[in-house]
Image (cartoon, rainbow, N blue to C red):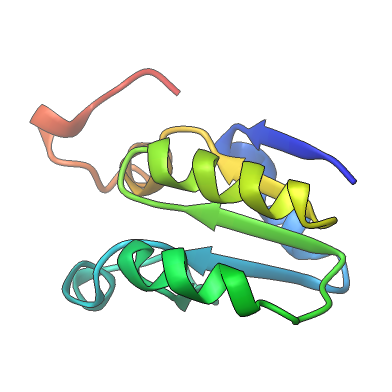
Length: 110
């Protein structure tokens, strides 16, 4: 299996592939304030325990968090467990910049 970090502009293509799940690792409150459409919310603090019993069979597991650090760790862990795991570079903040919805102080290069 493989692990990769993708730019946000590749997300739409990957999500169209059958057997792909998108997981938002941010808190429930952050998820409620806004998230990528179709994402399942599993807060990172819960993910730490849930990963030990993860039995779902997906071809691809895509993670994102606020800026990309936690999602990179989660993707590496799932890769070790035999999944094709992906982290989105820049996390949700990168997504907001790409969609043009970031506030000026959130701008970052994607």
